[in-house]
Length: 181
Image (tube, rainbow, N blue to C red):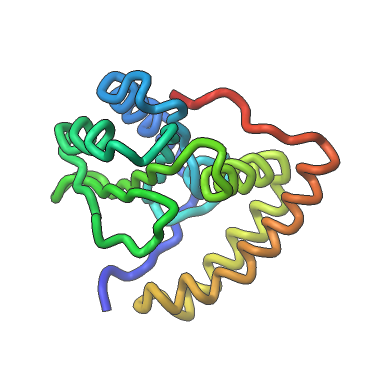
């Protein structure tokens, strides 16, 4: 058991909070970060979300790790070397700071493209975002004290959105827009 999962109504401060963090990250990382993007539910206008900023930093390569690890740690971010996802390097906020997840992924990889497509599809389809918010609220109501069960319960909704997003991407020739920071 940990913190109870709460789904908050959309907060217009989220993009401003990301913009400030994005500028700080861009300054610290320079050209090491090919892209710095606001991803996750807080990046979709109007979408209810856990109030956690998700940031994706796209790099050309995970090696050398210190090229991005040292600047991120200098900002107080904590490297989570035990993250089981091998397609990203993961950092969290400094203790006592605003909840932030920083996902470092390799530019052009499936895992880097997927959150951008998910975000852009929900931005372009507010009804789908509303349905997703309802699903998240139902999952949080049922499994709010059990994070892994909440994630598992939400997963079928995420994959259904991604299926729809792929169809949409093929029909419009989707490509990621410019970097957010």
